[in-house]
Length: 442
Image: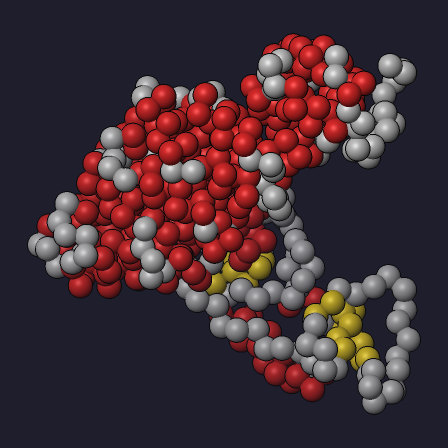
């Protein structure tokens, strides 16, 4: 087979089926170079970057053969014989030959493959974890930081290393160490706690024991909430929010300042990014939906202005995942009379919320119907007329035609009956749907 290399482009492309024309143009010089067959991986037919040999004697690129084995295959792809061992040995001689070949053809834009790092072994991971625990018991913070940075460095090298680290007990050990250092002064232990937090974030989901016993302790949770308010590093706040999302709701309720910290995070959603915003909204949703003291927490969120924050900071231009969670939280907040009153008084509520109907997801549409159902009151004609003017009547008809859950269907039907009496008093200004999705006229 032949691969095409373009001088100056620095791009390696697979051979195309048809014969490519050679151009002698100075600006577009293409030269076809034959890559030796034994330099290719038998699985992908790509130039090997990290050749390794199986027990059958066949050499493959490390990434492709590891994926083959991880997929549950126990045979050699070429010989089809069953593997007696899954050990793979680096083929250094072939790798050096490939590197020399790349250097010889660098004038044609061929890049030399880098010498691959040796993957971390399970023994190295467990040994490092043992040393971390030992240093923690001795109170040697600097040694712990050094070893955690070593784990972090391994994780950055490859996904294979990350899998090896996670599967050999590192998450549980780091959760335990985090809990240990969180019992002291957070300011004093800030560096080691921050390092552990960063590594634990990419180890999610943390094992159950790590989440509920160590990270779920009052000291650890208080520390994570403290990090939520760290004004120095956005990344630290992001990492804390992602870990808090995995914690038990009832444990979070007991932590002082959790409500205020979450509201502050949602306020700066643009700074903290989509993933952290979704994490914070998920935590808030579970706090106001399923916690035993949800009524008290609900009122506290409302007092802190969460209704207005959701409408003015989140729902205006949020992406779908964030929008769905924000609508879920707003729906819960409207279970409170105070929440409903604040929502009614905000001019953005009905136009923004109704706009999301049929545009985000089925779950979001159910939240929208529920929110409008709670806001609309027979005694407030102005609210009903506004709902009609921004297209609620039309969209409800379409929703019933498209299909929805039983609870949403009942609320939509009640709303239609309620709004129908005011149609003559309001001219609908949202004609974007124009009944185009309806199966029959109404």
